[in-house]
Amino acid sequence: MHLVKQVSKELGITYKELAEKIGYSESNLRQSVSTNKLSLQLKKAIELYLETISLKKKVDEADDFKSILRTFIEK
Image (cartoon, rainbow, N blue to C red; front, side, top):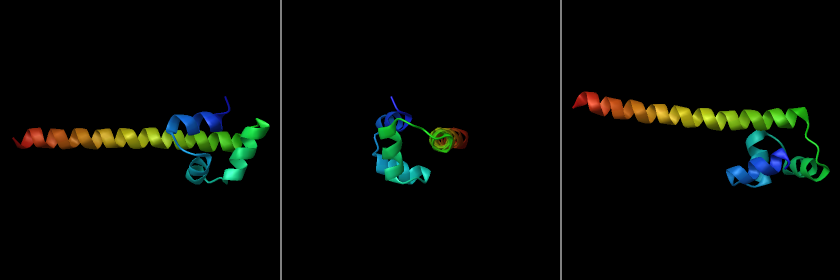
């Protein structure tokens, strides 16, 4: 499966939404899927976007942990 199609499906977002997130146009993503070609730049943009999502999740989890720990210490 094409990376654009796979990521859009996994994240539950449209090509347009994915394009906005990674700084591409929807037409570029659609063309990439229809021709079954993936430029190195597009691949890297998607990889960096997925890494950003992962890191944001880890930061949120750390913030939650700090909040729980702070509450525990205050008691």
